[in-house]
Length: 96
Image (cartoon, rainbow, N blue to C red; front, side):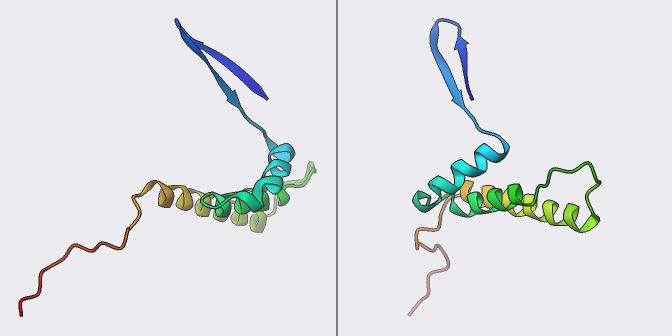
């Protein structure tokens, strides 16, 4: 789905998004090319695969598993936003 959002006298902003099964299919297709976001994509695919079409209530085990997936995904997103350690450590200087 593509949505267009005009910004006054600036250029229009385009937003492309997929949901549910289509998002899962897209993630599976691009998974071999992902590096930084690969772990997030695997979790999202797993979450989508855990969904079933049913009118029954979800069992507590399924609910707990989905909440754990969401927590892991949130943790991955926070980890990516933090600056990476480039191998430089700052600490006390030893005297010889």
